[in-house]
Image (tube, rainbow, N blue to C red):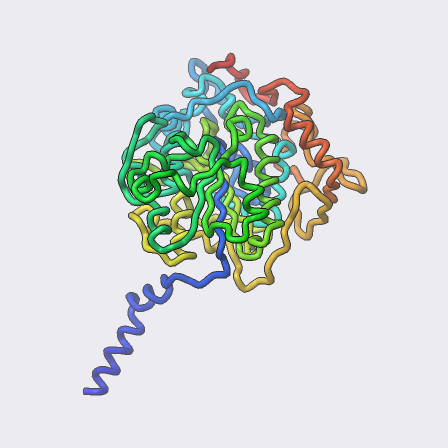
Length: 453
């Protein structure tokens, strides 16, 4: 009898079910503070399509130009301010996607602005973070559509069927903040216009949130984030940080360099705070914004996924200069929170999402912070800047100034010391949009269509 019990026990231990239970037990991590920073409206190819080693624009699909036999290809944008917004509604996104053929972008945009990608010199600090921490090149937005549904998916594994920016919508399904409240895990949501539902802040329309927070507690203006993370001695364990204003959101046609500089200031504040040593920062963009991306998004259910967006993982425990190819999405931020704080999944999307742990090495010596802009001698920097001086070049050009010859974007490599004073001068100059003509760039096919609203 005893031998039979032992044999059954051994079979259970060796079974796939037992192995599944052991490998999927929530790990214990040193992460105690999660910061999810979300900017607006850019695809992976639009920001990182020429990043060395990433799945970028080499895989671009030529886009048919309506009424011609020609096609349009990617072209470099050399201005931090562009001429107009691009259509990124659900209808436009579905037309761009075209049942996975990814060939409707120029047709739907009625021009080739959609095919533009930003010169890395206009967003140098995002590339700095990628080179020193983790860049995810297989991370997708939640739906084929704009801000509101994607922000709802940052809170829940569904949007209640909401696929566009709609007013007066309410919803009652559970969210991650409900789970955090039940588990007594502190949280905060920072957003411009925090007290009303908008594309950056869907919580005031959540009946489950309002039931427990009738006075809109835990919602704050983004303008107060730096002071709070700097001075508060008990900062929340989970924080979402949205743009302070439209002008700083990177939403077209706003200045991308000004938005980047604001994000850098926020990350610097985290790195200088007492919370850095136990933090994980997830920096991402909410939706595709109408920009081209060449990777067809996997369709995990009737609502999405949406197009690829950039994502960066920044932490003392993030791997160094690592490109993470793991299939991930906005639901992975939910899974990461659930994994760190040992919370159950809310639904199918987060249950099946990656937990982002491939981006971390918790056995490594904790990483020192990287303050930008500032004196910085990189250990591994996969970028080389042509004509750099001994002190190193300015980290970016003024809007509209072509620093690199057309077609050389794939070889944007910096090997230099970033000098703090020079960096500040040039970034601020770019942030106010001085110089250059909005929408400048090299066209590989038809010229850009007239400005549209």
